[in-house]
Each structure stands twice: as C-alpha cells, then as structure tokens.
Amino acid sequence: MNQDVKDFTVQKVKEFMSVPYCCAEAKEAGQAFLDALGTEQEAEKAKALIAELELDIMPVDQLIGFAKSEAGAQVFGAENAKNVAAHGEEIKAAQSTATARHVRRWRRFLRGKTRFWDRKH
Image 1 (cartoon, rainbow, N blue to C red):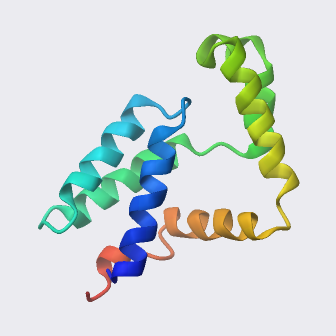
Image 2 (cartoon, rainbow, N blue to C red):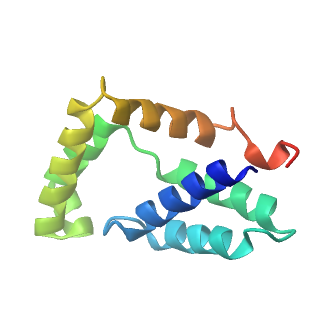
C-alpha cells in the first residue's frame, strides 16, 4: 500500500482504538494490525481487523437509540452513554459534509470494495 494510504489507515485505526466505546476485540485486532505493518502478516491482520469491525458496525440511528437506552447505560456507563448518543447525533447531522464522505469511504473500504492488501505495492 502506498505511504499516504498507510498513514491514513494507521491514523484511523489509532483513532477508533482510542474511543471509550471501542470493544476489546476491536482494540486487539487493531493493535495486531499495527504490529503487523510491513511484515508478511500485514494482509492477514488487515483482513482480521476488517472482519472484526464489520461485526461492530451499527447504523447511527440504532447507535443513538441504544446509547439512550438502559442497556446502553449499562454497557457504556451513564455518562459515556450520553457522550456516545451525542456523538451519534453529531455524525447524523454531518451526513452531508466532508466527514460523511470519509465515513462512506470507510464503509466501502470495510465492505471489501477497496482491498489495499490485494493491490500491488
């Protein structure tokens, strides 16, 4: 993968790993991918990371509803649940902005339409 794509990917992986509502499995898969960069295992760990992230994808409206529920408060903690819901509202409000374009790009990427590990580097 070219350096720009690699830098962008590393940045986004670190960003999602740093949010308080990132599950342990996604953090582990993200760290395994970061550790494998530049090795023969990079493609394998990238595929594993994408598979893990696909399991965790939730539509923003569903996320907001969950975060506002009692179950969301139990999972995230009362204060974090409010923050998650507010963040979901921000994402929903930004659907027509450049941020939404990045989200759409990541969705295409995660759905396997763009697979950087299959490209010649």
